[in-house]
Length: 414
Image (cartoon, rainbow, N blue to C red; front, side, top):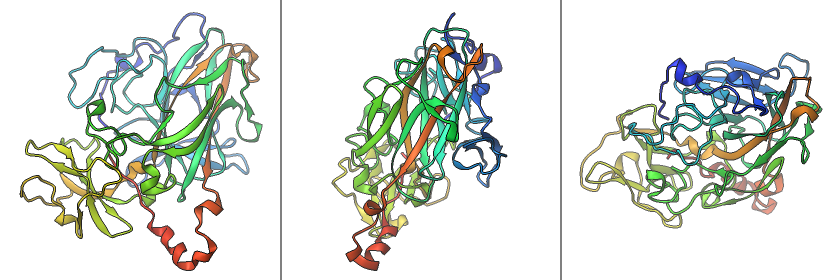
């Protein structure tokens, strides 16, 4: 992702309360209450840090974890999540910044976002989504946020949220809910208690990355690699205090079945089209596990730009036995797998699911966590594993079918 580096004054502008008398989440990284989090473990070999979420204090006996927030020095800083309040956080109306696309009509002036140098109403591709990795299925991950309860008017916060499957297994979806407390002490929010969720207009509450599944020519970018005709995600049931996923819509399940884990991603042939390592490289072809061949779905045209070669997910692209055989250019120009401009890597984005919603904080004096001036609420996410009967082939298929599980398709960058 491309980052816009801001000075300290720009970063903190507008981080006070969004209005007199409003109940607001505490501004900055401090808004995320990390009493049940081991903050900033790492970095790993790739420079990634982890704020690991537990069902109680991390050092308490029996503490368990089902997920973590990830960040690195190029995109964000500790602890990985921050809160922003106020209408003036760097709004610009229109932009001529290279490589970024204005999104001024669809963002919000208050938000929960990654602790990057961007802001709520900043442009796309500036590191706004916080990345929550699911490390185990079946258990809850509780994110707690502190609220200044001296005001009782309602405040709207956009959630810039991304869930990443790193469980090592396929997932059937997730449930997101609001409430109070963590672990076994969690109690669900109820209607009219001053805490609620709402969808983000007509946007799907869940979407797999646009670069993999997205309409050709929309949003000012090349359409989805696997499907350039439509988005993909989970259908959802949405009420005042929860989001629950249903069946997958779009072509995602045609390629991968259920929501796959990051390590099951397919290999991809990627092109760094802008020479900027902080932006996403474009996926041009991928290795199909079932055939062992490289399928090409994009091409570089005579202007040196990526172009969709095959848009329809039901139509296969040209196949090649070796990655070096892929015909990347319209003409006969040669190319080299140099590891920089053209390189091979896992297409990890197929494990990523963007989640879109608004949280509203209102009169917190009735919350169980209210202490006279402050209160807190919990954003709980519980991943749902694929049920065993659905995940396994019929017993009659025997060992051969079981072996086929290792050939399920994997994931891609866009």
